[in-house]
Length: 180
Image (tube, rainbow, N blue to C red; front, side, top):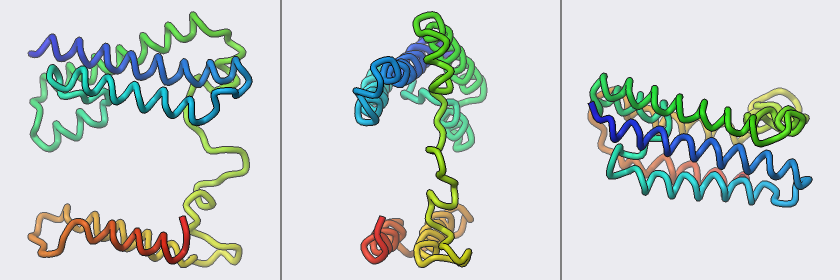
């Protein structure tokens, strides 16, 4: 058991949720003056600082998905993984509780308590540009499918002789050809 690591994960996740959701709520309070850039900087800088601060103590997971992935890969034992996930969840819950105390309920309702969502009128298909107006495959979808195919073929356990960078090159060529 690494109690010190669990505490580091609690603090790091607390900071990420508190500052991230706090930035979203603050932006709503000031009528969008900080904008998406301010919110993104708050999240990005918090992650950078917290991962740097906790990396030597706990590995700087700050996310149950990262911990579960490392457990699956055998990089962390089951007991510590359970402790990390519990600490991360408790840190997030504590931060959300403090946010609910600090900000008015109307602001938190207007931002969905900081939960990410697609913009109005944006669907996942439109976001990914997979379907065009005639409901047929668009040119971009071929590049996306090939890119995922290149990336996921490495998980079948067989040796491969091509570079892992190939999928990035294919995706980049598709972006240059068809646009972002």
